[in-house]
Picture (cartoon, rainbow, N blue to C red):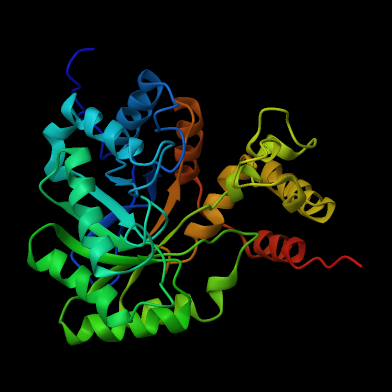
Length: 334
């Protein structure tokens, strides 16, 4: 494969949003490598996805130590992508990674100890062939490790130059407040929080998003399409090759209830009236909120990524459309 050269017009159509109170602008849509970039996937496919993303102004690539499968393989493959030309644009990229979930055997390969987090970042840098990452996240809170230890490790990553910024993911509002308080003591700002957030999972709206706005912390929504539920994939049931059909997948059949499918079908009707796909409406609905800096999307194909990027052509909702969506989302079934 020839050395990659980026599209000279890559910044023409993408929208960028300031990440809290910081100097960083993130693309409205970021590319997540949770799925489809592992050792079991096809390199020629996912390198095309990565190149297409950057060619359309996606500057933020989001990873974690155990993304794959196998663990670590998404970072290794991203390192290969960087070596094949994308790395020539390193100063135009925001590369993030995380640690907090199971990574290696024994008591030091999970959760939030300083031992685990520092070792994990060193391993991630080696896998990707990088001197530093732009953002390092504590991937989840650890109930048994003092928050001062977890946040202190993030602070030292910044001071050592191995991470430019730090973030947290999967922390609720109380855990977030505690983490931010510790970081303030060290005079290190929390750049960003990565909560699970979608039309069908709105736990962060009540307290977390107001807290992030108050503290000047950006928000990037993961699983905005609910693992494919908020697409046209499940409108006629559960396809044989879908994530929900796999016994070991993150999305299980019993989560896709009849009530959920009724809501999804009604939302799809609203999407059709807007001239958008259901996925595009789900993305636009998140981006209507100025507190949401970016929406983190995966992609299994170039065409899927391009369809998601087309969302940016219409992020506006009329008051009637918002009322209709809220009516569907608030439906109760006896």
